[in-house]
Amino acid sequence: ALETLQMSLVAGTIAGLAAVGVAFVAARSRGAGAGPARRLAGAAARWLLLFTRSLPPPVWALLALFLFLPGPLPGALALAAYNFGILGRLCAEVVENLDRRAHDHLVAAGSPPLSAFAYGIVPQAGGRFLSYGLYRWEVAMRETVVVGVVGAGGLGRLLEDQRVAFDYGGMSGTILALVVLSALVDLISSAVRRTLR
Image (cartoon, rainbow, N blue to C red; front, side):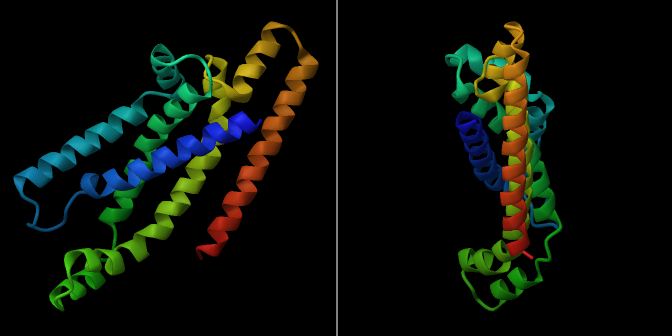
């Protein structure tokens, strides 16, 4: 159970940080300010996000198992790759729909670009990014079972071993542990999201 929780946390953290970094590049620019280099970078970022979310977690897990020994690391990386694609797309949509008036006013008043970004964009986007990240953490918690079944660690790997051994009592305990972990993650995520309102 602890390994499963660690897998979901590592996957969520990697996916969240990478998605936020790519979201600003992948977001379609409004207005005529985007040059050819910016448009090309945006298209490449959008294709990267599309590619990573087009392969389901078990396929990513199988690819990761070719590079690493069976265990929790391939599972965490597989979930991170898949959730990066989804989170990156969601965060890019947040960026596209931001009200940029505060940012534009700060720039017009002579504020440095980094300060205008920090005070005009981050407060609007940060809460939504975190909310999406917490939701995907909940989903990644449940998806650890799917990647575990193909050998990528966690409760899924234990469940598959118990299934092969016809250990139905053990399977029941493993499923119960997964339900308890999912409920715990859901409670933590809901509590954090309530503080964002």
